[in-house]
Image (cartoon, rainbow, N blue to C red; front, side):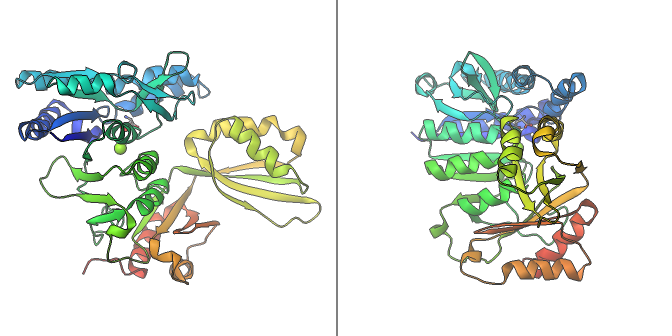
Amino acid sequence: MACIVMKFGGTSVADLDRIRNVAQRVKREVDAGNQVAVVVSAMSGVTNQLVKYCTDLDPLHDAREYDAVVATGEQVTSGLLAIELQRLGYNARSWQGWQIPIQTDDAFGKARIDGIDGSALKTSLDAGEIAVVAGFQGIAPGNRVATLGRGGSDTSAVALAAALKAERCDIYTDVDGVYTTDPRIVPKARKLAKISYEEMLELASVGAKVLQTRSVELAMNEGVRVQVLSSFQDIPGTMVVDEDEIVEKQNVSGVAYSRDDAKMTVRRVKDRPGIAATIFGALAEANVNVDMIVQNVGADGTTDMTFTVGKADLPRAHAALAGIKADIGYTDLLEDTDVAKISVVGVGMRSHAGIANTMFRALADKGINIQVISTSEIKVSVLIAAEYTELAVRALHTAYGLDAA
Ligand code: ASP
Ligand code: MG
């Protein structure tokens, strides 16, 4: 008997009709003779509302209480889906993170999974029960509820698939697969039948919102076969696989964008050893992830340090930097939330020169100014003014020959 994990995102469980639809899909897999663990997100919009309650009360709220609040969205959907499956005559039950348990670290609000004891779940599946697991949550040391960061139900699903040694992990969402870019911006975007873990990892980390970054990382490390597919249509999705399973390797497989970052510039800090360590040390301490970084040439013994942080982390980043002003002596702290990060990703970059230049040329031709650049082995990212997001994505999609015929 094959064990499979099915994960349904927020739009797939947005109301009771959609939960009924999900139950039908689960029923199909169970009737086909599979053991099924379902992982559910909160109904769409719910997590945003819960987050807003916390930030409206206090932008610097206690992260443990934030988790106590935001974890409730998934608890609701896990119970509702179990009820519907029972109504259809199936033996189903809900599982919260702590009941399994899914053990996490204590980075509340963006906790990592430390381990899953799948034995109780396995016993339940072996007894013929359908497990409906609340995604996004686990239990941290000290017996506190922890959540896995926005989009974290994907990671719950992949981690469960690894723990249960599931045959595959199907991630049902409101798109029917992974596209070369966002089809809402580029109607000529193409669906990829397969994408490598590494490309998916880069795309997820730069803002393609199909899968949470950590879920891809985990799938890659644990060898979990992940499929991204639609819960509304019966068509094959995109398989995330090892690079050697892909025959036709593109130089660039996808163009992604994100408006989730803010640019910060620390003006005229002293140009001496230890400044970067102090700035980024303080941000790390405050649990703020930093992405792109540039340090400019120093002139009169001072220099500017520019970097990006998640918009949601801006208040925390600001507080952290204010706290070290006396140590590093900057004149201003500039913040710009009107920026977008545009990235091109492809394993072909490893063996081809000129990929970055194609990007810079295409943006220049549209008169788009590049504010910050960063690269990795298979990715080039630029930060631009947010108003040019669509224009840039379209230009790049065309420049790399990705447009559908
Ligand atoms: N409900 C959570 C969120 O919106 C987790 C998830 O949907 O994956 O981020
Ligand atoms: Mg999601």
